[in-house]
Image 1: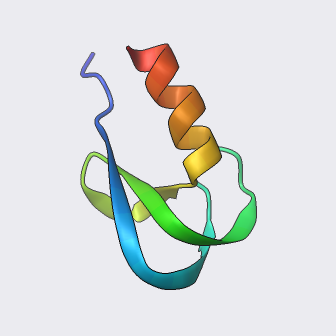
Image 2 (image 1 turned 180 degrees about the vertical axis):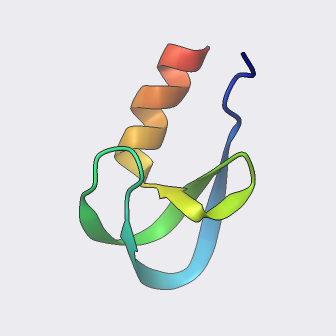
Length: 55
């Protein structure tokens, strides 16, 4: 099984997203992508929690 790769990105302005992990819709200035897939965005809160779990 391949581990998920999270990468955090800073956006130029607040952008509406739906987190792929928790489903929450929010305005974000930083998002993470899962395996470099911009259709699978993760919000900052889930990124912080998930990255700690993944090591």
